[in-house]
Image 1 (spheres, helix red, strand yellow):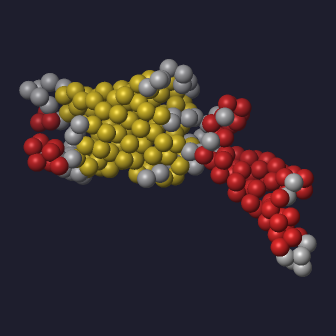
Image 2 (cartoon, rainbow, N blue to C red):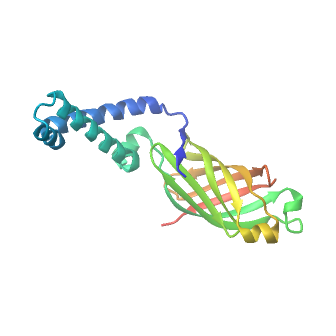
Image 3 (cartoon, rainbow, N blue to C red):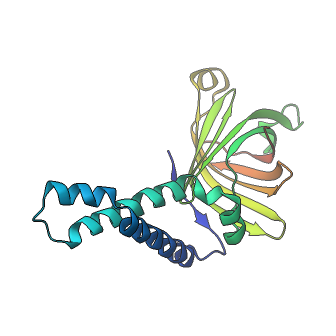
Length: 211
């Protein structure tokens, strides 16, 4: 399920104020120049107060434009470059290694695994899903921060093993934290994770974006 996320080191309130102002101006221009919905309201109810059709036009236009911005327009290059919005949306191939503790390793060797990371991102919401052959994990809270030339994705997740993994491998549902550093334009990222509350393991993770 999509949830809110934090853009660290960015004043989202100030950005919303600027973008909201721009959307209001566009909505008012639409209302004054075209105002189809307002004209329909005025035609259907000729005695309605004169400001009502314009108010309806402006409100509807604002809602539509903001919906489009939140879902798609924030990714548009001119907007994302001005406000430095990191866009991590897409499908990523994942390779990982369980580094510990000792009892989680295979004869003392690091245990390798693979999966698919899916990031569904809007301007205000995100969902990070990791699926492997044994389980699926879903983000519960997340933050994104720009650190120099790298974009850092930090998120907490809940993991649910599938029925086979529960029965054969004895895996239990657990909670965890993951942090991945991504170099924009490279399509690659590296990081770490650790689990708790049901499974006590930690390891490394590498992601590569699919074309």
